Length: 396
View 1: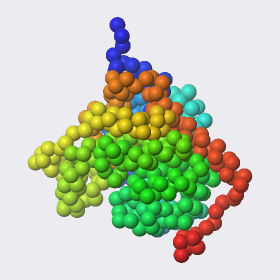
View 2: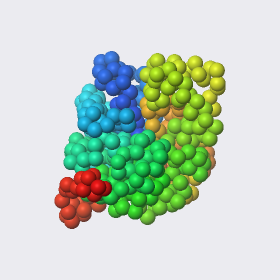
View 3: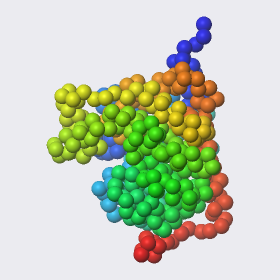
View 4: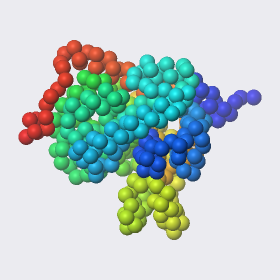
């Protein structure tokens, strides 16, 4: 008998596990237990409490994870820097606690070595340029501490870059913003364009000599949300070498979910909660809202629709996966938590994706993008030293 799509998906992930571009477990640990892993032991299954733990990462075929060291955009200045450092320290505590399962990884080679050892390569990505407080020295310090991408903005503009979900400020990237991109190229830190305005995406592609990524964004042509990637930007990834990693957040992938989520966010605000709050109290409010107004439900097929389009426009060498687990209150049916990746791979197999193409989607593209960024950094570092430019000097 021919193996089922589900069995083929599990077999494929055993050989070519998922590199997931974005997981907000560190923020969930901060908010719920202040990084106390005695109170939330990731070696146990926490279904219903978090989207992520080690047993479900294993069940989902995850081989590498970019842990987001996100801090909220309403944190600013030194407070944002300190909170990001606390997030980095929280990830380090997590890696120290579970060395048999989680392997610190700073390079593409280290990702491959972790896979060979049967451990989950663990990298960090800082979500939002506010975390560096317009300081290139802080950017370098984060890189030294292991951060391997910076998302240029979160939901609000920074002084040097426009966000997708804010009013236009500098029209994309300012002169200092372009210097941030150049310094990231010199360091070998991936430029992450999720959350940024389309103008910022284009300016970053004009500036970067290394591959960019979208750590958790989908296709705007399939779901017209400003957090998604327009086709003209997707089409530029082939020349850049970048990777767009499709997200699972329903309001970014299912048109019917956009207005519903806006109303649900307003419901949280009315009760004194931030829209991104996923604490138990906030989730109770969400459940009450959903009972009175049923939620449009995305599925693995919804995500597959985005990946089909992204592959067509960008090419199969430039697509990946970035679920945004533990950073969203709602997930698609069948992709309820980090154990669900085999359901997506099975859906893509049904649609005729070859195993070679799926290996690129899950593992090879992301590893190659980081390796290429490392090669650019080696070259760039022979051309120039660290930049000491300031926002005031470049932007006035």
